[in-house]
Image 1 (cartoon, helix red, strand yellow):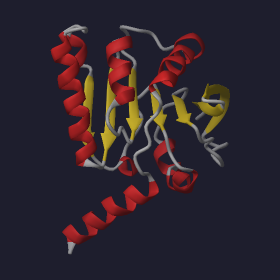
Image 2 (cartoon, rainbow, N blue to C red):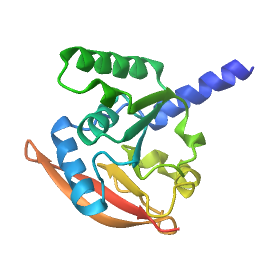
Image 3 (cartoon, helix red, strand yellow):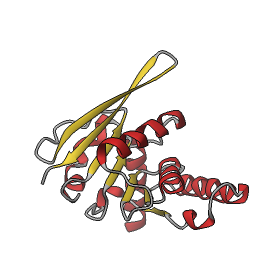
Image 4 (cartoon, rainbow, N blue to C red):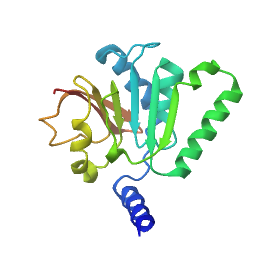
Length: 185
């Protein structure tokens, strides 16, 4: 029975949060905003986590371009495998120092069960339908942590964090937003 329950939880999580990838062309702008407006410092002891890391795009960029510890949690093992293949391929290309790859940690798990108290930057690309399940997760974030939400504004979290900036990004005459929040308590 427990295995069936666990499989149902994985299936349900996939419905709540299917794999949605952040466009590569937006990632650089998002990280520039973090650097210039939210205190991201390359080569620092800061930590980033991507909730629902997918194929690893955000954590790979974070580690390789800013040299900070970058964590990802993902429930889908196939996406984790894809991320590991991407990392292995980048290592082979030899364009980055090998020590930077040690900054990337991706593990399988359910981010609804996560404690965020160790992270300075929390990235999420979530559908509005699953946001109601996130309050207890965001409550565990440390004060002044920056929460980055791609595409969808996080609503009804006024007691946990405040909206600091909305970055508007354009692609093919379509507008996309990234919302930056700061944890207040």
